[in-house]
Image (cartoon, rainbow, N blue to C red; front, top):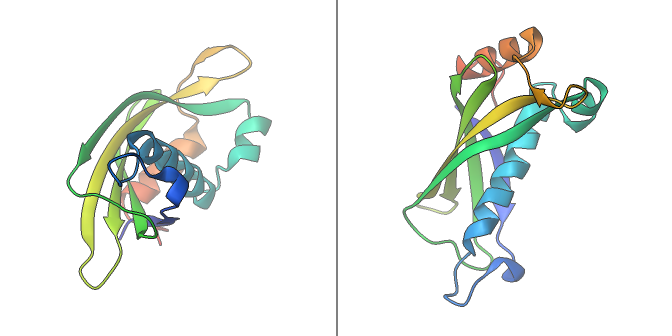
Length: 141
């Protein structure tokens, strides 16, 4: 089972078509990523202390259904790939209800960035181990 992050659709996130404005999906995925990494022991304060950031390198979104005001959804986060200096997470956004429905899939590649050096860096050993464990399903909620 993947890590899950809850979302409640707010009226302020709705566009003229009456559905969630596209950019909000990326904001939700950023929140879900941070909660997922915090769950692995790599929250924002640890990033600051260790002078590291996970920066978006590439993002793709496929929409399959719409979310509307007051809908509730879960963003399921799964580790798709672990590279030398990057990793990829798949964020599946599922509308809750009697018949859960996949509404979008966001696949985002992040680059491990050293804020002191101002450049990308190899994934830290412990961070790589945490991602590998999560990819294997160990310690997931």
